[in-house]
Image (cartoon, rainbow, N blue to C red; front, side, top):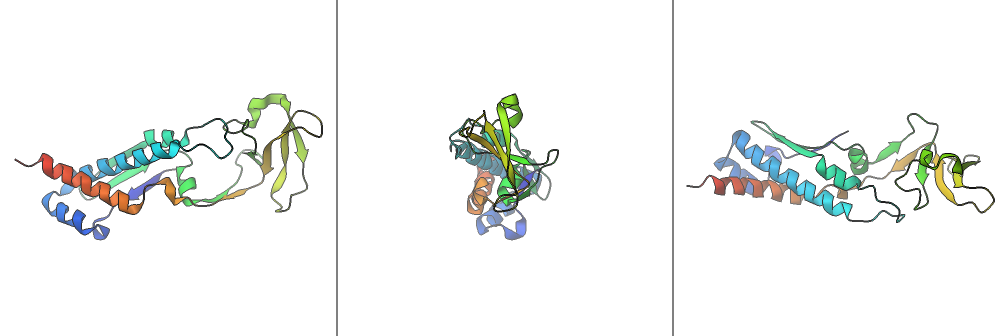
Length: 191
């Protein structure tokens, strides 16, 4: 899935509109698209510096998203796309359900974060639960035997992920990047 940020003429700030009179067409949208894409890349790289909540192995999701941020310009628009699976889900939130399995494996241990349950092989043991308090918890995958075996994953039939608008820079920052791109184009074209 892709998340796209589109800056349209009718919602442009006065600064963008003023610069658009001086530079127009594909060149102007290319300048805005390149600048906005770079702003998003820098933002995602900064997000990647934040450690995960469990303190486990880093997956560098946001760094990967930064490398997969692209732009395209046309005569009347610029489009910035992030071709990273999961970025739209993090931005907009929503329900996540298992696709090929019966349950989602949600890491609850730093050792499990960034790893598939299958990587543990036969070391994991299933502890079934009867629906949990929310009716969506199916069980636990614990490491080893015995009553004190540490839980590695919670098995859930679905989860609801809250939207996270901080995945992308604020709208004001994106507009400022578009203006900066147009200003850079204007300066480059001055005699």
